[in-house]
Image 1 (cartoon, rainbow, N blue to C red):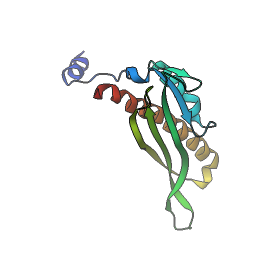
Image 2: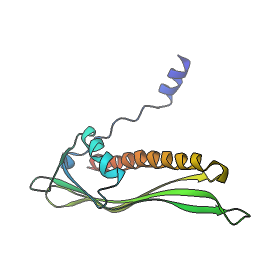
Image 3: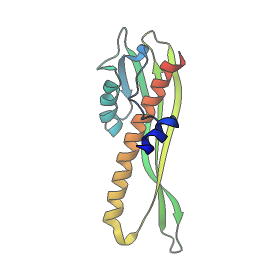
Length: 157
């Protein structure tokens, strides 16, 4: 009970579901890579945030463009045996939002996320599983980052 009172007293509260501004309630999504996880996960998250995701652009429909979406490992450090020991998984997305009247409400901007991990050549299968889990975590985090950027537009009005 004391812990709950302490949390309440310090101003802590759980993060609520992002709420999109009214200008983005009807939204068409344009993603450059239709095979990406973002293409699969973002429409559901937008719907949960109060948007109606439309199949095609049209009158009265805002557009969220994602022309760049890349998720790839990069070498971070090399060991004494000239083999890569550490990697960083980098996820970069560029977004831009245009309201139903064609006015840019979110100028094109990049969101970058990364996670580091080590490579143990004796545990190759474990590293592959670790990399897959990092990809899933970064995907979830990226969807939330995009939603927070869009929700912030409503607070700026």
